[in-house]
Picture 1 (cartoon, rainbow, N blue to C red):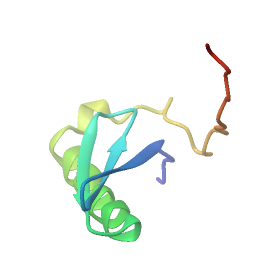
Picture 2: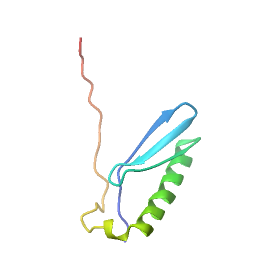
Picture 3: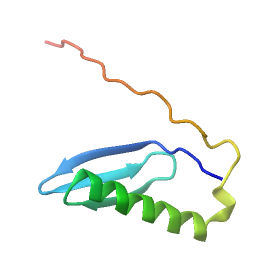
Picture 4: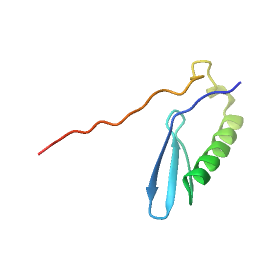
Length: 73
């Protein structure tokens, strides 16, 4: 079964740090694509070792996210 997990990626120095928000799994890479590929592998390994966390409530479609601009003095 394929599940959709939420991923955030931010840059720290020369590294892109990718995090799976639902599981707390983190990985990194020198490019966005590399950090995503590394995170996918890390999540797969995490799920292999923690089969009990695989829940049918995990999303099968990605959620929609956006940003919010706030002016604050």
